[in-house]
Image (cartoon, rainbow, N blue to C red):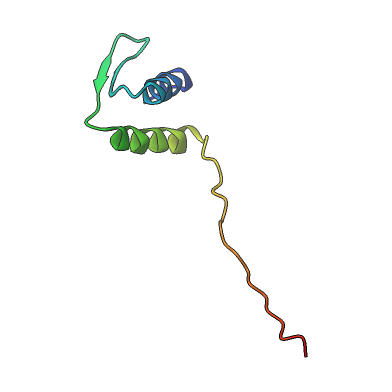
Amino acid sequence: MYSEAQLEEIKKAMASGLTKVRLSSGDELTYRSLAEMKEVVRTIENNLGNKKPRRRMGYAMRVNKGL
């Protein structure tokens, strides 16, 4: 199970563009891609309850013929 500190370490590595992370516990993690890291971060956040609500993006179009 991951902790908040480990989540922050992974995010910090992602921000630097690194795919290899050495956690404070001494464990070393190597990911295949940044996309894989994003998926892991999303999973950890869901498990820790840090899930940010997604904002819906959309547009409403209203037209009036002026009659």
